[in-house]
Image 1 (cartoon, rainbow, N blue to C red):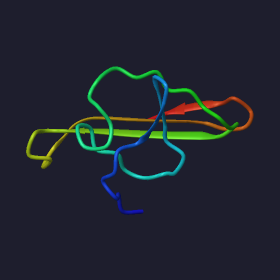
Image 2: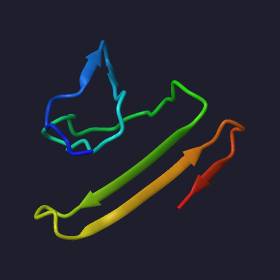
Image 3: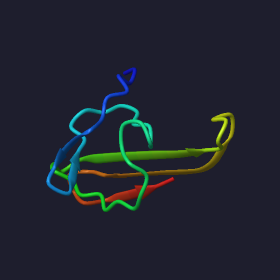
Length: 74
């Protein structure tokens, strides 16, 4: 799904990301440290940290939790 480059919805100090997609730091969410929490039994997270020119991945983090609480990291 292409990103619309709109700021993510805030609820107090929390940012709610309801839809899957791409979120650009500095455009849609502020740079900083985040604590992720889930609102359903299944969650998938993929983070790709790129260089300033967005040509090379510096680090990739991926994990998911299924309904049984099993965590898989890649």
